[in-house]
Image (cartoon, rainbow, N blue to C red; front, side, top):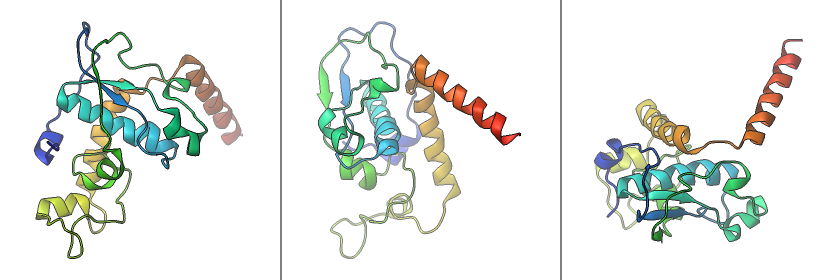
Length: 184
């Protein structure tokens, strides 16, 4: 069953469970082969984690090289980030609904912007309610909708996107170099 706007609005952010033997793990493998870095590492991970939390699964983020080879030359999650809940063991489930469903058709996912193809309309088979149309086919900037997406994305990123120590050091060095050069 697709998450509704109501469950999407009331999801419960979860920390990694302390005792997690026998939990169900949701494999987040990278979405689609045409996705660029931000879509893979942000949107698909954020939405995969949201879906896992909704289903009471524990997310397992491990990109499939087949899904990152085309645009990222096989770059993996673990090249940048610490594993999420690496001590969890249990059956692994996967979903093959990342593109186009999660990316453009479902109402609950976080999005980076409004996508051009509206799944509602006269030529489409899907009839949409006013609420569906507002989320899936907005006209103009909707500050509340973007704020919701940012808030939900932040809840995931602050728990799951934990850069490796070397990546943090490189980012801090780059920031200090920038500040030094920017202030003269």
